[in-house]
Structure formats: C-alpha cells, structure tokens
Amino acid sequence: MKNLQHLIDYFNDRYELENQVSFRPFFLRDGLVSGRFGPVCLSSNFTPVRDAEDHERIVGHIAQLSVVNNDFTQIQTVAAGSLLNQVINQPADLVTIINFDRLSRTVHLLNYLTIAHLDTKLFLDVDPRHILAVKYGHGTYFEEVLIKCGLKTSSIVLGMNLNSQYADDFDSLLEGLNNYRGRGYQIALNSQFGAGKLESAFIEKALPDYLRVTAPELANGNLQLAIEWLEQVQAVSEQIEVETIFQQVENEIQSTLADKVGFKLVQGGFYDRPLIDHLRCL
Image 1 (cartoon, rainbow, N blue to C red):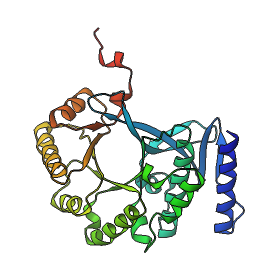
Image 2 (image 1 turned 60 degrees about the horizontal axis):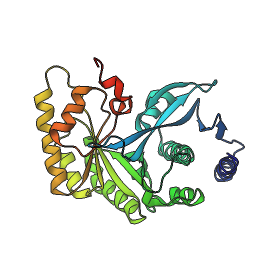
Image 3 (image 1 turned 90 degrees about the vertical axis):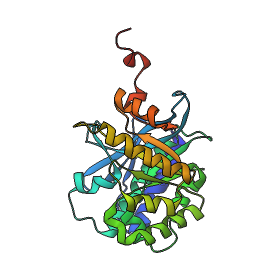
C-alpha cells in the first residue's frame, strides 16, 4: 500500500498544479482509492469478462463507477456517461466532462493495480463529448498516467457508447478513436438492443477491437425480436472480425440467449454468482 499511497500523492500534487487549486481529490481508505468530484466520492467496481465456454477464464475487467457516501459505503454503481446527469445534477460543460473523465479513469487505474495481470485487459468508458472536445492528442494525458503506474496503453480498452444523437459527429468521433488507437489503446463500441443502421455503419467504419452488446431485458414478449437483432449484430461482427462481449447478463434466460447466438465472451452478475446459485434444486 506504500507504493499506492505514493502514486495517490503524486496525482494529487499534479491535480493541484494543473488546476492551480489547493484541493487533493484522491484518497485511500480501507485499501480502495476514491476521488472527490463535486458533492460525491467516486470509487471503482470491476466485473470480470469471461470466456463463454469456460467461465473460470477471465480475459479482462469492465470498470464501473461506484458512488460512495461519507462512511465509505456504496450508494450505487453507475455508468460513467450517465453519472454527471444522474448524481452531480449540474450542467456538464466540456471542461467538466474532460476533468470528470480524467479523474474517474485515474481512480479506476489506481484500483486496478491491485488486480492487474499481464494477460488481461481493463475496459474503461470514454464519454463521446470528451472525444469531441479534445481536438488532437487523444489519450496522451492518460498515457502519462499509465506510464507512471507501470502499465502500457495496450492493456487498456477504451469503450464508447453508440448513440444516434451523435450521428452528425460520427466523422469526428471516428478520428478521435483512431487517434487513441494510434497510441496503442484498443477500442470497444458499446451497443444496446434496438441500435439501427446508423450504428451498424459506424461499427463497420470504426473496426473496433471489441463490440460490447448489452443484454436486453426481454420483457413484453420481445425474445424473438432480441434474437433477430443479436444475430444481425453477430453477423456484422463476424464480417469485420470483431470480438463480441455479451454484457450485463443477470439471469438464466439472458445466459441462454448468449449461448444461442454464439457470443464468445460474457459479463454480468449471472456468471459472478457461485455455481450453487445456478443449481437451485440440487
């Protein structure tokens, strides 16, 4: 923990110097690094990405933000892209978005050091607005953080949510993602049930290393629609040779869907529970 505290002190010094403030956002408590941002404290929750045929084989971890209160108990786990609106409840200008992304990724990286392995990847999300706000040198700042922690860009997979609201900015987003890739980062695109032709076209242009597909909730008899959509997604990914991750799998029906469609990598609470939980009647 002594080396971890040294890194925390370094990044606090850097934060104060860069922002010309007397404020140290990063702190260590009970072995976990957190960061203060506005009225909340942010920490990390890592969920394994597993081989669909061998759930014991872990290929990486997806980082999510945990919002913690003053006694350091977790309030909720949220996606980075939605936290500014859900929790902080303030207008998200471009400077705020960039600072938030940088702080949260630094928190994740410091916590990841305790579980990092040479042959696994850390999946981190980046806000599309951050990509658009940075005009050049995407990933340079975070690469400096990685180097300080003894890691390489090749161990990081940066994920971006696909969203048709950014359709007019797809070319700029593509340029930003290519800038990240040029620095050695791998790229993931995150897709949800119902994504259409615009998103598929962007996937084919971006040629990501991973496609993260969120498991549909399968309510109101939409199972067949979900199967058809997922098979279309798989067809696109196979055509451009992209690894797919079926994520946020929380129940047996979703797990069966992953097997039926043929996903090679999976993630979610269903796979994290002990085996005995899946064998209820034995």
